[in-house]
Image (cartoon, rainbow, N blue to C red; front, side, top):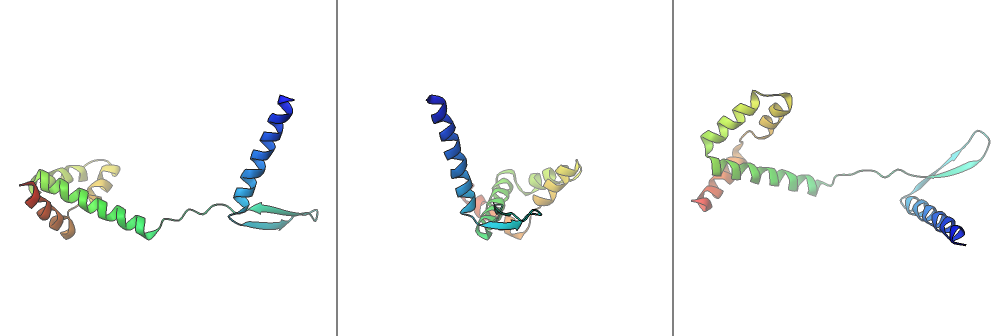
Length: 114
């Protein structure tokens, strides 16, 4: 009796997963033998612009805080040290380069830290 119930539960879970996948959309395909097969569409990964904007703002704030706490010269030396390293470090140096927005944020945070 318990084994039958476990098999039934497995079938129900499989059907629920299939139903959830089908709720996102489905496609039909005609196989060579003439049978029409319905398959769920794959989930598409989309990054919303709001998320990318928030990541960009967080990066600017982080860089500004580092620049304000370390000082402009020390920050520049550390970024230069990264530029002479491995490929990953060079990419990090390119990302961490100070731009006008970072310098402005560093100036504003510097007023608060002092």
